[in-house]
Length: 179
Image (cartoon, rainbow, N blue to C red; front, side):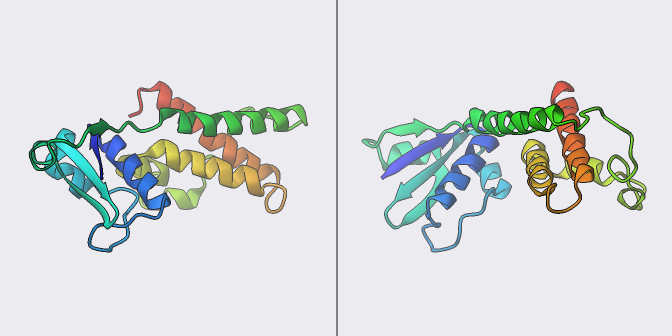
C-alpha cells in the first residue's frame, strides 16, 4: 500500500491523472476521472490518496495516520516541469516555422483573433473558458499542439496563426499572474 498526501487541488488532480494513465481504478471499480473537485473539497489540503492492489481510495490525512500508523505517507507534488517541456517543444516548433518564413507577429486577422461566431452570446468564448476551466495552460497548450500538428494537412498558415494566437494569449495570461 502507498499513501500520498496532496496539499493542493493541482497536486490531487495530477495524481489522479497519473494513476488513471497507469490503469488504476477506484476501489469500487469506477474509472478515475482526470480531476474531481468535489473529492478535493471535502478534505482540501488534508486529502490523501490510498493506492492498493484492489484499487484507489481517498480520505483525510488524520484518518490515514490513525488507520495506518506504520505506513509512510509521501507528499505528492504535481510535476511543474511537464508543462514547461510542452512549452519548450512548442517554442522549438515556432522557431522552426519562423526560420522558414512564417511570421510570428501577432497579426489581427478576424478568422484567427476574433471570429464573429465566437462572441455571439455577448462574451468572448475564450474568456468564458478561462473563467470555467481550472487548468487554462493545459487547454491552451492542447490547442497550440493541435494547430501546429495539423497545419500542413489542413489550413496551412491559418492554423499556424491560431497556434500563435493561443501561445501569445497563454504568455499574456501567465504574465498577468494567471488571472
